[in-house]
Image 1 (cartoon, rainbow, N blue to C red):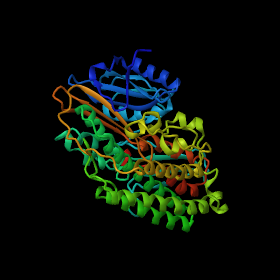
Image 2 (image 1 turned 45 degrees about the horizontal axis):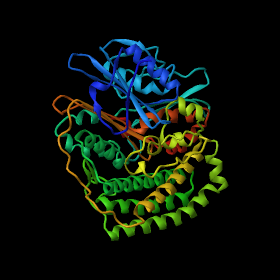
Image 3 (image 1 turned 90 degrees about the horizontal axis):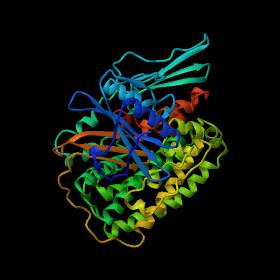
Image 4 (image 1 turned 90 degrees about the vertical axis):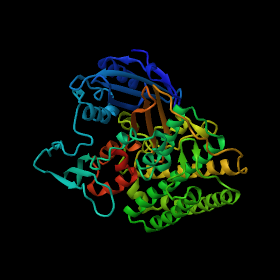
Amino acid sequence: MGVWAAIKNGVPVPRLNIPIFSMEALATDIASHMKDGLRTVQFFGYPTDDNRHEIIAVLADDTSNSLIAASALAQRGQSYDAITPNAPSLHLFERELHEQTGIIPQRHPWLKPVRDTNAAPHFFKPLGKDAHEVAVGPVHAGIIEPGHFRFICQGEEIYHLQIQLGYQHRGVEALFKEGSPLMKTPLAESIAGDSVIAHAWAHAWAVEALCGTEISPKAEILRAVALELERIAMHLVGLGGVSTDIGYLPGASAYGRIRTAVINTTLMLSGCRFGRGYIRPGGVLSDIDEKLRKHILDMCDELWHDLEIINNCLFNNPGVLSRLEHTGRISTDLAWKTGLVGVIAKSSGLPIDVRADQPYGIYKKDRIDPAMLNSGDVYARLMVRALEITQSIGLIRGWLGFGIMEGDIYNAPSLMAPGRFVVTLVEGWRGEVSHVLITGNNSEIKHYKVVDASFHNWLGLALAVRTAGISDFPVCNKSFDASYAGHDL
């Protein structure tokens, strides 16, 4: 194998420090590193000034809390031996690379479009005279975003679920290159509207790293408080949503009521219930006073008390357990091979959590022990959420329990350094959020790349419902709670 560049989460390096291999050598190295236990963070391509494409791979070595990076140059129409047959977690990355650059992964098992819904359909056909198809979407009832689900069934049993996304065509990554780089946080906040803090932090951190801007310990704590409030609120959405899907109305109403108290606290902190306008490159835009600090701690105390009651009701109800246990199971081995992250990985026995594996901000000091189960079913995905809520409450209490720190909350950033490369990883409530920022020779953004946790996890939903009854799909889908917007960049 070639020598890859050793990098760290959020630490910029000169772009020329990333070694350039042949496309075949890069693919071979990736497969070898994956076999040795590394996992994919980024794999993408972008056009160069000489009508070629630069392909960049970033892999995580979570045992050593480090990242490695390497690249290759290739032309549209050039082919290489696909990595997916040896490392299935690359399947979607290779499909995206082919769709965006025209570079062909030979012998890829299913080279269908990732986001081009205008391309010819790529669907499996039912096998056998008793098989049938059930198509749902892309237009759904209510306010759900567009996505097409095609079930291949034998009676009520799901043989395979095909998921087609990409209907929104937002062009988010290209928009980062337009206008001032220091004014793009609202765009980052719009990547996934339920993960505002996670994406805003990843973006602001990338800009800060390239500007050489240090943020104060106080600002780091305030960012972490906002992130954990976002995690609590959205995990409560998941718990309430699954309760609704199985008809457990006490859970649906109780979790919804509790969530309102959490997002109203985020409103008091940031001016928006979803945290928009709070994080900016250089820190945060509003401080916390003694009154708000006390309110947050009191809210955490009430939340702890109420959750103890409703969680005991939910997780000890025989009717609830009969719908959750053994439903939509994903084994540890399958979760690893397909590259699942976040709650979905942790519920299948994989302790993948950026706060612990690639620590940043205040998490460098207050290390996280990932909440984890190994049954990989709907029950485990809900229980991990409940455990993470408890963990987040403890973190917030620890950060705010001794008073308010002194210091600035914002330091204005300067011009970004030219010819630099940085990758930032933040643990959102779904899992790993990753941003890559590459600057050109004039400090402009040469390329910007985003990977939301949903990009890793959508395939997991298709695998979870195999052999399940089609009536199990809604509860499995809600237990994954993957984002359409986070995928349809």
